[in-house]
Amino acid sequence: MIRKAFVMSVNPGQEQEYERRHRPIWPELEAVLLAHGVTNYSIFLHPGTRQLFAYAEVESESRWAAIAQTDVCQRWWASMRGLMPAHLDGRPVAADLVEVFHIESVR
Image 1 (cartoon, one colour):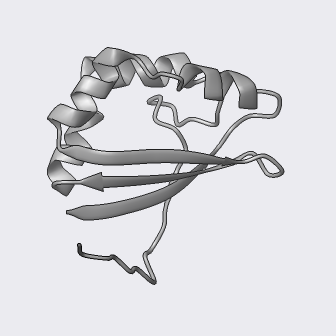
Image 2 (image 1 turned 90 degrees about the vertical axis):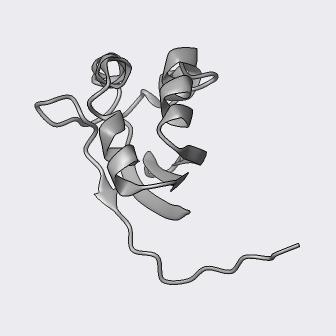
Image 3 (image 1 turned 135 degrees about the horizontal axis):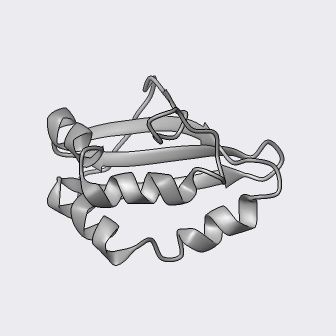
């Protein structure tokens, strides 16, 4: 399993709408994520800075990257564009984080 972490941000005043749209996300987007090997995905909001911290566990980098090419992901990005900084192609502005520590308990 590959652990990924990245940061994004929410535009000022859009925090509640961003959260509302994720509770729940579109069922078809959830299905695409699961079908592409995402086994765990969380996004956290820092209220003071509007920074988003995202963590995902994925089966492979190529399957993770393929999500961006799906119709439902493209539509999701278009729907989120006004809530957060985005690139011209619609993808959210994000910066990958480098893992420096991990501990896991095996039961």
